[in-house]
Image (cartoon, rainbow, N blue to C red):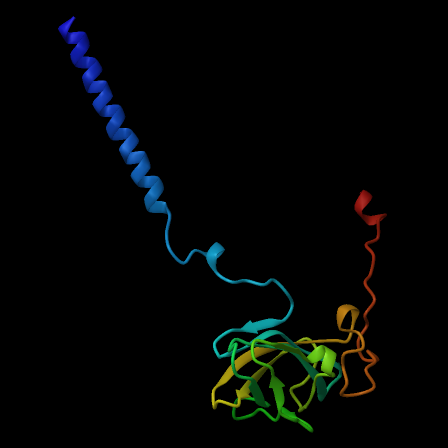
Length: 187
């Protein structure tokens, strides 16, 4: 009988140790700064949250090579003072991308300005063409700036009518989506 009790005690100790080990393993797999805890907005445009003004959903819509329209939303994180966007231009030594007729954009305190509603900012330069990226520097009234790699899309589908740089058409882009040939998949 004594041998049986000793085995039970030993089993209870082993079981408790195994449970503690399982609990420690589970808790150690939890960490900080998990990907699921970070801000992520899936979408075609790019976001930059490094300044007091967030640049959200930034894209360039271009229906013809050499010009396009910069579209983004600017969100002011300062709840008490307005902010301004003072410049948008290409970066790099060989960049000729410039904002034509740019006027300062005022973002109200705690507010948001959506350039799609305002007509966007027309960009010109040899590097502006759909299918690529533009390295842009966005300057703010407080002297800070951010650099973003902005995708360039044709004025198709959700971007139709947003290119103010030309006639807004997609004459150089084929916006039709081909349907798959169902006869070739039946083989």
